[in-house]
Amino acid sequence: MSYFERMDAVHMDILKEIGNIGAGHAATALSKLLNKRIEMTIPDVRIISFDEMMDIVGGADNVVAAVFLRIEGDAPGNMFFVLSIEQAERFVQQMIGDEQFKLEQDCSELSLSALQELGNILAGSYLSSLSDFTNLNLHPSVPALSIDMIGAILSYGLIEMSRVGDHVIVVDTAIHEEHQPDDRVNGHFFLLPDPESFHIIFRALGVEHDE
Amino acid sequence: MMSEIVQVVKVGIADMNVVKAPHVIRTCGLGSCVGVVVYDLVKEVAGMAHVMLPDSSLAKSENMNVAKYADTAIEELIRRVIGAGGRNGHLKAKMAGGAQMFQFRTGTTDMMRIGPRNVEAVRQQLQRFRIPIVAEDVGGSSGRTIEFHPKTGMLLIRTVNQGVREM
Image 1 (cartoon, chains in turn red, green):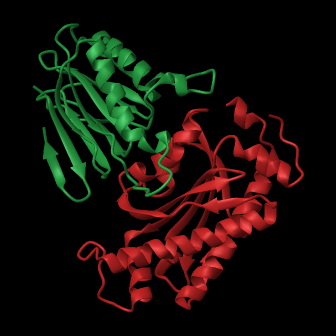
Image 2: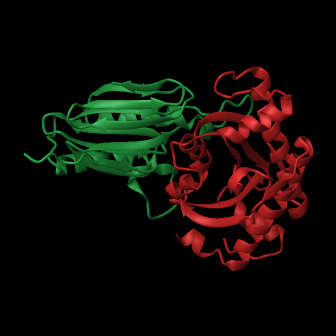
Image 3: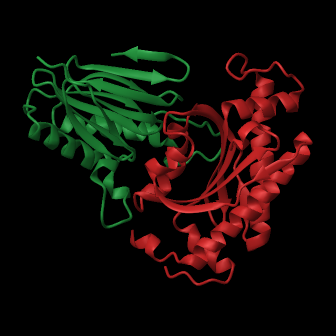
C-alpha cells in the first residue's frame, strides 16, 4: 500500500475536483445531445480493491455497455463510460429516433455507432476539460465499445495499476436522467490514471506529491 | 446420510482458492484474464486461479500477490491442490479466458495483447509442471464466467451471447 499511503486528503480532493469538472462537462454535453436534463452525483474518489471496483457496478458478471478510451499524452490512463443496458438502450433510442430499438435484438451498425459516438463525445468533453484545468496535453484514443460482463471490461483498465499493487484509485462520477423512477444511477464515468500519472497531475496543479 | 449444502467458493480477480467435492468453485467476469483449474478427479479436489498478468517480472512493487501472475500462480496453485489431497502426477488442468475485449485499429501495444499473452504463459507453466490441459476455451472477444465441479471434473463456461457450455 506504500504507493497509496502518500495520498493525503488534499490529493483526494484534487482528484474529486477533476472528476467534478470532467463529468460536469460530459453531463452538459450529454444533456445538449439529448435535449434532456442530466443529473450527476458528487464524485467519489476511492482507493479500493479490484473486486470492490466491480461491485460498484453490480458485480463482475453484470452485463453492461461500456465505452473505453485510452488516454494518451502527458498523463496516460484509462477512461470508461459505463451504462446499464436499459440506459444505453434509452440513449440510443433518443439519438436515432427509434423507440422500439432493443440492444439485444438488433445490434446494427447504426446503433452501435451511435453508442460509440455518444461515448466519444462524453469522454472527449471530460478529457478536454481536464486538459484545460491542468494545462496538460491529454488526448483520447479512438473509443472502443463493448457490451459484456463488467469484470471482463474493467479489468482491461486495471492492467497498468495491477503491476503496482492490488488496489486502484478510481474517480467515479455517476449520472442519471432526471425524472427516472427511483433516481437509479444509470451511468458511471471511471477515470483510472496510470500509476505514474498521479504525480504529474498533482504537480501540474501545484501540489507536491513525493515520487 | 445428511445431504450437504453445496457451497460456491468464489475466486476474485488476481486470487486463488481450493475446493473439495461436493462444493464448486467459480470466478466471474474473465476478460483478458485467464481462469485456470488444476484438479485431481479421483480425490475430487480442485484449485482455481484468476490470473491477470503473464509474468511476475512485470511487477513494480515489493509485496507481490502470487495469484496475479501466471508464473507464480500456477506453482502456488499446484502446491495448494496437493496440500488439500491432490496427488502429484495425477493432476489435470482446464482453462478459459484470455479474450481481447477491445479491438483498436491503431497503436496496439504489447499491453493491449495481454489476453493471448496470459494464455501462452499459463500454458507454458502447466507444461513446466507436466500437467496436461484436458480442455480449454480461450481467446475471442467475450467475457466469461466459469464454474468447476471437482466431483465430475466439469467446467461450465458462461458467455453473454452463447449461454452456458460444458467442457
